[in-house]
Image (cartoon, rainbow, N blue to C red; front, side):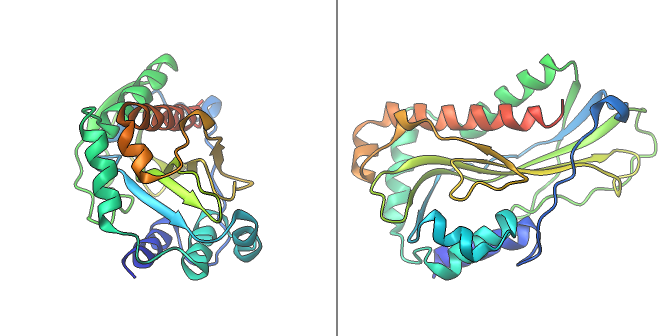
Length: 249
């Protein structure tokens, strides 16, 4: 039950039950945005095991075009295992800790590098995010310089997942991205989702294909090769950061 509830919590974060999700693309050329306030704490501190007991085709049929939110609803109803052993998460995180793995630092460094390459000025804003990792509520900044936006990159989860009857465990990352005008945060400049190794790639969201180099046939295999496991998640997080930055081009 714990995993099902966690998945249902993600539904509320991503914007509702069966409502079709419609991203908002960013028009850099006409926006005048050159400075970004990036909200810190964008990735969970620990990796998470995700095991879906159905296959992508079944989920796609059930989701009915509802986007990532619909995917999570159907996954929870159709068979996300509620009884994933807590020690699986413990084993994976112990393996990563042995490599001094820091998912947040990896993602932040890659995102900042890409944004600087795009000539954005960036700063970090420290806003407390709630325990359920919702996107934050912002107050207007009337004194903000012209061309300033607030970027909320909210990583819901990353780790290793197993889908349907497939034996292999592969990296995954799930991110929501939203950007607001700093002076008038009711003005949304960008709204999208980025998913690495999506179970059902969305037609309107960003889907990054998995690198099959980092597939393991069991949790024990991940434990046995922590360097490769850490490298697989590093590749996934860096690719996800790059895809996120591309939304701001």
